[in-house]
Length: 615
Image 1: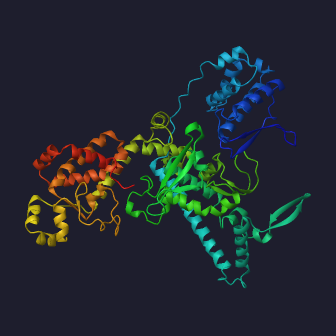
Image 2: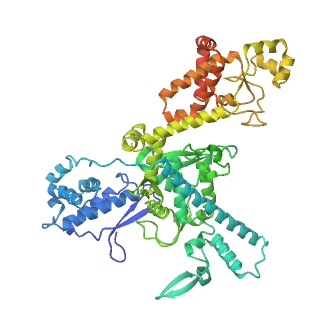
């Protein structure tokens, strides 16, 4: 299409239809017949279902076309048409870019190949070359993730930014509410009156008070002079709304705690489903979209109120229960609340929205206004430069070197490496694309496993241990239940039911289904594995066979599962069961192992597969 100023542009829409970007093809300097053919190729390459789905991929295709155009037009003999583009031009472009020191030369050649394959009128010789072998991947250093210490610095800085923003916004919301309720006397304070006038206009109209002025024959609406005296306009908008850099900090935290791809994070929706029903530990299910997955592009992400093991401090007791920014659900709930009014002015249901003082990303010509955060990563990179966090590496004088650029892609690599599991891709992709290419921190990963094992075992040993009854104590209780019940702090009827097996759970017996720490006053819904540290649980000799089977099953799973997952989930119960077995003599344990039948083995499998949990 042609613009009013005579420029010729190719307009591309993202696959979800939400965004568009215009590329100026009138700047191509190659001869017209060749230019028309290459423009047609660009249109075909960026068309729906052609393989490119986002601004980022569109921009790369256009940018590499511009570089190919520059290369061709600087040759002594410039090809005049698509038929004159020869294999030597294709290979020469690669050699030229390598000679310029461009590290992405191979990627550029691959994209130019895709364009030439769609170019009408190319020669058979060029078509044959395009079907041939591409240059091998250069021997470069593997991609490096952030270290765990670096990741914590990033997360802590992002949390600090959001905590400060929350305090600022909630304070101004409260001030405005008091003013509207008539609880503030502003008659003698002109500065407070002006501030409240700005807050009221920001809340009602999503803008600061403005005045009309004529500038160079054009009517403009500029902020009132007394508004300008309050500070920079983006900072004034920040009185009631998250600033763009704070929205970027929220995106960074989502990357730290979910490991999702950049685009699904930046385009996360505010529409969600509360799987918890609004009670208990919060869980919000949010729909995400990863275009490269094609028919499997749409997926659900569960944001839970459970802190990720990477997120918590070395000493878990240092984590304040009110600090919601250590859980994905808490982060989502906070951002959802702080952007609710902004979303009213933006329209739509995107979560990460803000007022942009100018522009809208690298590939946008938009001016100031309300809009979703751009998906080109420019705000994230800028945020990293502003933070200028130190890395773990030092120079020759021992001074910390700056951390590598802040990118959501690198946060994703780090998440996958530390968790050793795929995120929105297959096990094969995780192994070949992420883990194999990023082994710089494998020793650190092993250290993390050891630290997690130590921490989980320490927590298990610090908890109260299940009370055990010996065979002699059971026999005494049968002969004199009233006296034994008094000694154990139980009602005689409870003791009798426990001895009869009526109160058995899995690994023990429960003396008070509503008196535990997990759901006090309500029927207990905790996993039966948690009976191992519950004060209401009692372990009798008849429970030993099942305890032995579960202990052995956990040991087997240690060889079958990812080490880190096993440490986080089963290291504690395994240590507690080992303590229980140590209290019994070796002969009793071996007898229990031999007498355990199919029923015990089946029940143990159901327990560890979470078939007995209330969910």
